[in-house]
Structures are given as structure tokens and as C-alpha cells.
Length: 346
Image (cartoon, rainbow, N blue to C red):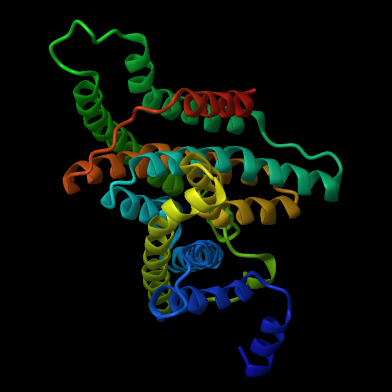
């Protein structure tokens, strides 16, 4: 790409313009006299938007280089990397409620925001849009199973009276959460094996084409990064995401006290949507190409991966670092998850 083409690309309105908030966030965090936790929270959130986009771009470019089978595995492994990084930072700081709110928001935003935005823009551009019902049912069924699994401990805790038991409800839910996390990770591993087999034996050309369209805007599809560049951007973006996630986690108390926001709002709405910028933009991009079936799969599969991979990983990691987080969700969180799944399955 020539220098003139780079200048022309940078002169157009772009999500990359949000990168200006990265040095601003670092300056507010580390320069004396500039510290303001509320400003740092907002600049870090805006920086996380563009970094999440870079992560998705780097993953997609790397997937294009290594082939459909490994590409599918990379997309599955790294599509929820922003939520995973933020969750690890949150649980390491003992912010279990914030982490669980972010998990709830991530699943809901993938199901409702990504798919809903895709339906809206696709319908606006093409009028009536359709998608294969069988594929939608398969994706919805997998998500339903994952949602029921992560909600089982909460339903059990709210339904059983532990007052007469020698063991506390917290200990039971903690043990159940760890074992359930292991089973969910095994289920995720099985889904990876199934995906590899499907890529190998069932419509490999179509699957490879779908992968190339998942995260990259139409005007950027021709740009081909080298493997070293893709890995470098992926590593650099991951480090930036860790710094920004740490800033956001440190500022939560100031934001909740100064603005009156709850941890549920910050985690479910703000962090949940920011961490899924890649999936949301991907769903919109392919919907603009009149491929709503792929938009539906992007949103549903990202939500399923969050339930099967990200949440169990963070449950186990929280136990290892000594700040155990369990699968005990509040009634509003349960209602939001169940309601979202029912909306998508019907």
C-alpha cells in the first residue's frame, strides 16, 4: 500500500480515529496533575473500542493465512479475547460482581445487539431479509443448552433451603461452579473438534469464504497481512487491552460513586457492548452484503463461545488467584439471560 493510499484511508471517517484516546488514557493514568478517574474511565472505554476492533482484524487476517481449519479454531479462540482479558483483570482485583455483570452483558449484546443491528441494517438496505431456519435453530439450540448450564447453580441456590444443612450454600455453589466449568470447557473442546471435522469434510470453500468475511470490512478484504504482522498486532492489541481493562477496573468505584451508575450497568451495558465491537461490526458488515444467515451465526456463536469458554475459564482462574467467583447470578441477571435466549429462539 502506497503512502498516498494510507493518507487517503486515514482521511476518511474511521473507527481508527478512536486510537487518539489511547495516549490520552496513558497520560491521565500516569502523568502527575492529570489524574481524573472518571475521565480515565471514559477515555479507556473509547480506547477499548478500537483495540477490540484491531483484535478482530488481526485474528481474521491470521485466519486467512493459516487455512480454514486452523482459521476456524483461531476465530473461535480469540473472538472473545477482550471479554477474557477484562474478566481476568476484574477477578484478579476481586471485582466478582463486575465480572459477572460483564459476562451477562457480553452474552446479551452478542445475541440481541449484534443480531438486532444486522437485521435492522439489512432490512433497511434490502427490505425483506431471510436466513435458513435450520441453521438458526441449530445455533439457538446450542446457546440454549449453554445458558441453561450456567444458570443451573443459580436456580438451585434460589430453590433449595440451606438453613438446615451443615454446609453453606456458598460452598456448594462454589464447588458446583468449578465442576460445571470443567464440563463446559470439555463441551467447548468437543465443539472445536466438530468444527474442524466440518471444515475438513463439509463445504470447505463456503466455510473459508465465510471466515474471510467475518471481521474485515468490504473495502479491507483485499489487504493481506503477513503472519508476523498479524501476530504482532494481536500481541500488541492484547497488551493494550490489558492496560485499558486495568484502568477501567480501577475506576469503577469512582464512576459508581460520582455518576450513580451501578456495577451491573457498567459491566452489562458498557463493558458488555465494548468487548463485542468486533462481533457487532462483523454482523453488520455481512448483513450489508445481504447475508443475514452469517450475521445470525456470528452473534449466536460468539454468545455460545462466551458461555462455553470465557465464563468457565474465568471461574477457574478466579479460584486459582484466590478470589473465587461462582455461577450464582442475581434474579435480574437470570431474567435477562433467559429472556434474551427465548427471544432469539422464537
